[in-house]
Image (tube, rainbow, N blue to C red; front, side, top):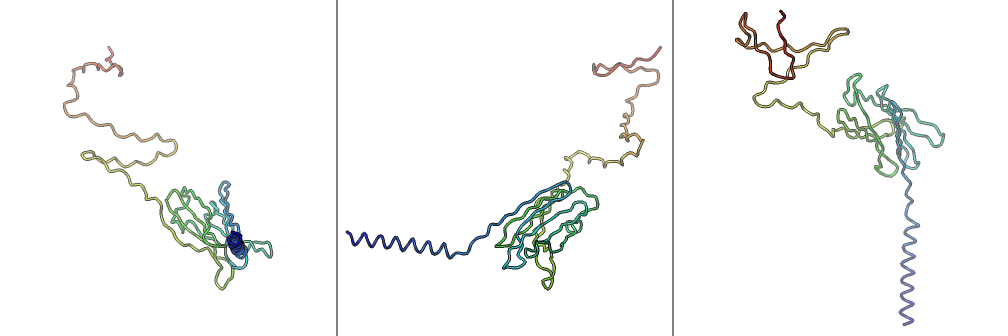
Length: 216
């Protein structure tokens, strides 16, 4: 009994030692934090950017509504300063018109160790893009790389008129300053609907309408 008990204790100790060694020798997992904020015409988000695999680098994304641009930069940890700005023209990227009413949403997500991606959505046109920041040519500067640009919603088509009904008329132009709005033309009565000369039409029996009587 004592021999079997001693063997069990030795086996349990060896198992605990193996587990402790595996935990000790496993590489530490860095804490990946991402956040975003918005104020009026600007949106800012942060996420990890892998410029140098040996150094953890934090990336900053800034969307400027007024300029219509997506900006990106990283923080140089050795100097404590930003490394220039890379930019993307959102008007060209999303095929938007000047002064078009748009609404952007963006946030960063974890892709791999030391690297995150920016997810950018435009809700008016239903477009969705994925971007990362990578080193520029020959390792100089930064470049914003687009990985995908797709749609999450198709444009809603106008409903077709029901069978037997004429299509709706096209909207007319808006009235200018000081001009009354244009009214659609009233339908003309069918031939024979008007009373003959000298014949007075009977008064309307609809209680909701006023009765007009000829003056004497």
